[in-house]
Image: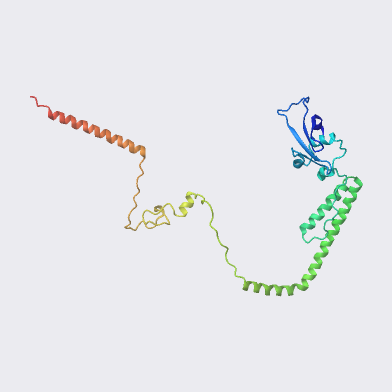
Length: 279
């Protein structure tokens, strides 16, 4: 409604359409002048604007309101006032009471909790209500404990009379079920992912690393071998020496130096032989 004061209106087609635009003397200037076409049907009280504000937000735009004021319309049609924007004085209360009888303990707990929350909020407002509610809670709690004791005594009496019958029935049912059922082990699925790394002690226990170098047994090493007094004609495993690449390079250099030294010596000897022997 406040936005309509900055707007001007010109008739595009009498009682059919109007052009709405911003006033030239308005302090906040627009970057470009926009004109909004508002079409109407006065017989059916229908209005539409090219901005489609009502279709998007559910509220009439300022352009349609400007046209209504220009046409001296005193009331907005009811179809343009959506129920969600109306102010309702009546508060909605749920008339359906919560179910008193519940089959499950969780349902019974929820029903009692809702009732007690409402009663507690009402009783906490005044001291008199608060004290009365505490006394009633203590009285109800004592009565509930008495009911528990009565139910336990009734159950003991009934269980003594029906114990023999139920024992025979359960034994028969157990025999029938065991004869029918064939229980097997569940399927074992392979574990996913990489197994954890074993410690040195665990690896030695599993005999993955070391063997006895004397008898080639997987159960012990040569330190704990009990067959040292015996001789075995077993081929000894030769371990390939892992050479350090740095040492290899150094060895190659020393070999080259030795070769160059030997070549120089041979060249010197050959030169001495080529020279004539002077007396």
